[in-house]
Image (tube, rainbow over all chains, first blue to last red; front, side, top):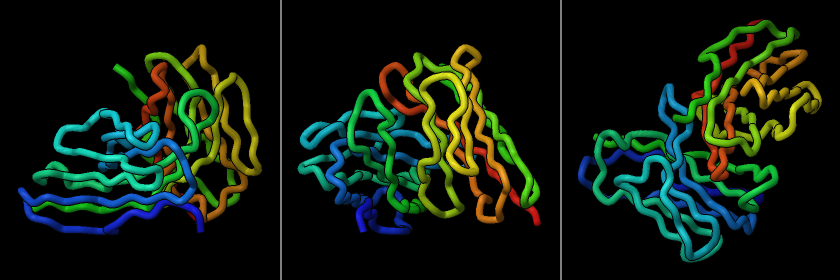
Length: 115
Length: 109
């Protein structure tokens, strides 16, 4: 089934640890995104990539890094986790950037708890 | 700053009609989206408006007034499975999506 796969589904980790959230899509979408979702707030963009080999910073990039070595994979790394990074993380993709509907397809999410 | 406002929670009865409002103030406008998100799941696309007026898609309709910075999502013949959060998002002049916090819709029998 075409879509986006995120891993892990859920993770608890100690503050200061390094963590990578994985995201893979099989739709050949050129644009990919990482969002975090916190109670009472709208989805906030962390990083994005308009095409393989390029990345950009979103609204809340501090403490996170991404890479886009190929079209399908877009991992998100927390170099040294802090409790404020406790959140639900969604990876998303779209088939084009710029004008048009550019509908996002979301992964199932990764629930991260930093203690 | 950029801002999307929508009610935090609404309650409606099965079989009835409900209207979820969204007002926005953004730097430019390149379309407005509605997504549905069931608890513990990913958001899924419902509708897209870029021109003023009403877009109808089955039981769901979405309206846009760009001059008023206003949209609504209309859900007819409510079913229990419509219990979910409804997210309003606007794409700004830089083609970045600005998201509202979502409206949690509770359907009662």
